Picture 1 (cartoon, rainbow, N blue to C red):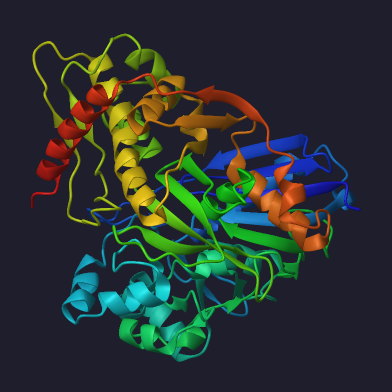
Picture 2: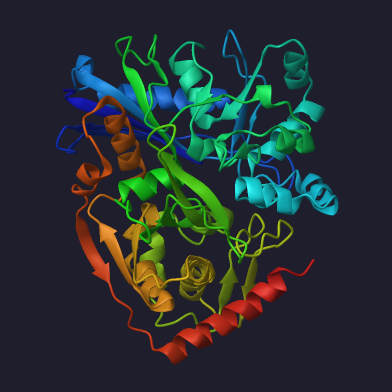
Amino acid sequence: MANYILAIDQGTTGSTALVVDEQLRVVAEASEDFEQYFPQPGWVEHDADQIWASVISTVKKATASIDAKKIGAIGITNQRETVCFWEKKTTRALSRSIVWQDRRTAADCDDLKKRGLEPVFSRSTGLLLDPYFSGTKVAWALRNWGDVKSAHMNNRLCVGTIDSFLVARMTEGASHVTEPSNASRTLGFHIEKHEWDKELNEALGLPTSIWPEVRPSTSRFGVTKNFAGLPDGIPISGILGDQQAALLGQACIQEGTAKCTYGTGAFILVNTGDRIVPSQHRLLSTIAWALSEKDYTYAIEGSAFIAGAAVQWLRDGLGLIQSASEIEALAATVVDNGGVGFVPALTGMGAPYWEPGATGLLTGLTRGTTRGHIARAVLEGIALQIADLFSAMQKDANRPISRVNVDGGAAANALLMQFQSDILGVKLYRPKNLESTCLGAVFAAGLGVGIWNNLSEVAKSWQCDRVFEPQMSGEQREHAMRGWRKSVSRALLK
């Protein structure tokens, strides 16, 4: 049995490498941020080589003090809809990567809607036609980036989400693969047939052959070769998109269990078991994971594009705080928001509105408004958008959800978590290990090499740190939601 599992969490703003032992004790951890590029309003790009450098750096740091020969498996979790373009033989990046937050294909999505194709995509993929997803990004790159188009014409192009790119680099080009939780976010993958769909891809203007091979989430995706100073031959045995990884890391393995992750964005998922539950409220039906070719688990997902990114905006854009961790203390300097409201639509709005043209909004400013009021309003805005998603999710699931497991960096903010519990009217359970996304990658990799035999063994490891219980009255909750809906209606105006 392996002594260590290495998890790589490649996120929107940085990369993390985590080494755990067989008892899930964290042996070493390292993180590193990388640059964000905004070439035009609404465009968001990453440099794939900078991402790769951050992965190499964090893995080297995390494994510097251990015997790397004892690493028995590697798991990957990644920002999902972001797409990379690289050369098949050399793995050379052909362009920047287009990030999930990018809105450049809004007009393409509108065109597909006008052609009456959204119901077709929704039935087959569980998704809506929005620039968020990968397919229209790939089609745009093929039309507009010469190196990408040339590589495609000469059969030298590889396309894939971040997981595919990392595996290609980690195996020196031996593997062009992905797995269902990532494939299901592209608009090109049929979530019931479990294959790249010709009709969908033709509508996008893409050949199905452009996409990676899809293997179950706990498969052998390849083995390391000349990677970060590690021994060759370590199996890459588990891959999950970040939100699905958090669902697994939170031990939400039973139908009806739910989690909310607070990262750059905020994402709430509820496990729907082996059933695809079509959303009636503009949420997403998505693949949670596949343990084999036939053993698929599904989820309903609500996506809020901005969560921790709003705190970064306060820090970097407005200069109200020096570090993200300061926001809780600043918000606690006031007893309420002083009438200030915030809609965090800094990159459009996700579910249930799906309005790429929406803009962020601060309301209720007066001469008496302080930095504390704005900080508190930002935290509350993050929570209020989750309340919209939660309400729609309960209706789709056709059952009450009595608890939500929470994780991600902002889950450490007790003020935010208490307000979230208040506005949802349910208990929030925060685990001792907030790195649920990394933990999901660990579990997937361990399942892939037989360290754990089933999900029940995985679930036994989950430990609670704190429970937040709602303290707000129903009347107060409804008052807050009325104010939120009024602000959202203004943010949606074009």
